Length: 247
View (tube, rainbow, N blue to C red):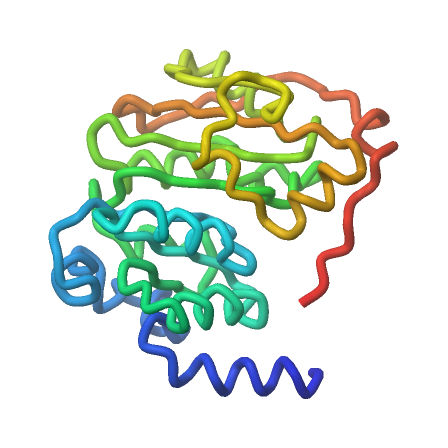
């Protein structure tokens, strides 16, 4: 492990806005703040917005700046990346954003039913060979459905043609309500100041001429989802290649 990683991990241990549950705290029981994030962590009753796979936390921090009347939580397993967002939030005095270092599969151990008002999924690994790991797949939609409040919203931003098409099939197969759907966000008329928050990697995709896709949809109380029986062409996606994400 590199020296910089070790330094970041050590510094994160001192951050009040970073939570790093142990294995026992989330695998064998519910996390101590489940159902208590508003009261015990944020000290208010504002809605909670979750970013799943937050990476460096740029989107969580960007949203927290724009919406002081909402609470934001970024979750990711990569602590060295998360350090950047957590440190920025502390430097800017943003008390409405926090970060949790754990696996997304454990969300139900961390949040109670209905505790989340919105979920953002920003530039996740499309997991072309592992549908169970796709963050817009039916396995995760079932998790989100339990966590989201009534009329809760899911946002997806991605550079991946594959993930965009797959999510479109999931939405269609399950008759989910769609508010916005575009395969070229910045050449549409909907790229407002929220959607225009750009992460480091998003800007690199744009610089390479890769259009950004965006979908905003609702689960509307569904708890079970049907996996679409489709095969999605991969060649066009592979021709772009992926940017290597460094820690």
